[in-house]
Amino acid sequence: MINNKTIEKFREIETPFYYYDLDVLRSTLDIVKKESENSGYKVHYAIKANHNPKIMKIISSYGLGADCVSGNEIAAAIIAGFSPSSIVFAGVGKTDKDIEAALKADIYCFNCESIPEIEVINYLAAKQRKVARIALRINPYIDAHTHKYITTGIEESKFGINTWEIEEVIKKISTLKNIRLLGMHFHIGSQITRMSVFKSLFARINELQEWFTTHSINLEIINVGGGLGIDYENPDKNPLFEDYFSMLNEFIDLMPGQTLHMEPGRSIIGQCGSLISRVLFIKNGSNTLFAIIDAGMTDLIRPALYQAHHKIENLTSEGNIYRYDVVGPICESSDTFAKYIELPETRRGDIIAIRSAGAYGEAMASRYNLRDLPPSVFSDEI
Ligand code: LLP
Image (cartoon, rainbow, N blue to C red; front, top):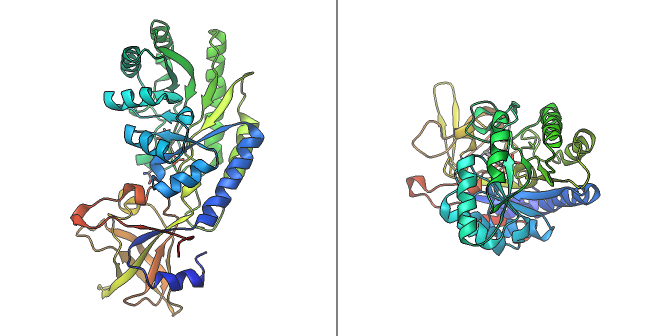
């Protein structure tokens, strides 16, 4: 809920901007911290969801690790207070420069996706006289039942190592002196809301564990990746962390001495952020009322790219309900936030909140049309 006092403050601020409610972030982090302490699971926040320095600093202060996908993310995570020994590094196309930086920083683990990648890491680690710790990202062939652009664990996806390749990869690793295999890694997609999907993944992980046991290979870690979804329809609802942790407790069979790791992004940061915008014009189409707002797909690309649904609220009107298409100012028809949604009568100057935009919102903003990047405003600053 964005309260009236906050709405009054919004009236004084130039739009569009991202608003972060830090009480919401902190209460999410309290749950994650409690659950991870109780279970002993290690949580690495997926920096890609939101790399705002203040956000990263708050998250690192809760003792979480980081999941990074570039050398720049690793550097930013360290500056924000994440310990290098808690950083995992993912990505299907890691550059030599990024691998070298990660080795230099002595990160915890590279999540590796192919033999050529492991060979390059071995070569670059040897040059630095180091042994790189790695986990194998395995493609478990589980359909995440989410948008096709953010589904990553099905056959013929560019991600992960196929199960039929595992034996060959293990053989290869045994010849590489500067590689140490820590465990298995998975990530089957994002915005997963069906708990049955995770149940299938965990069952598959248990099966794969058996393969390693029969080959007398001890794995220290199992990393289940990220993917836990949020309820975009109900922005004020808590994320599903408690359900997720209890699913893990119930369905994953860890071997003695094994640690479970995870990489949530959206579920940590999604619900605390809103994109705040002003209505520029109301325009009549033949059958449609368009509310043209000053935020566009450059500020929040998710609706244009994934047809994503974000709840939209008019914070400054209590008029009769009408239906509007809420659109941005950019010269592309995909610059549409929502079609035919109910809003109280909306006028020029009204303040609009696009909710649940904390994850993959600010982080994916661009300067297309030479627009300014949206600034961030925090609840403890206004
Ligand atoms: N681990 C790996 C290896 C990943 O690729 C991702 C996200 C995560 C963890 C974090 O996943 P999360 O818990 O946030 O679902 N831009 C898209 C989402 C892309 C997700 C990419 N990978 C969106 O706006 O929906």
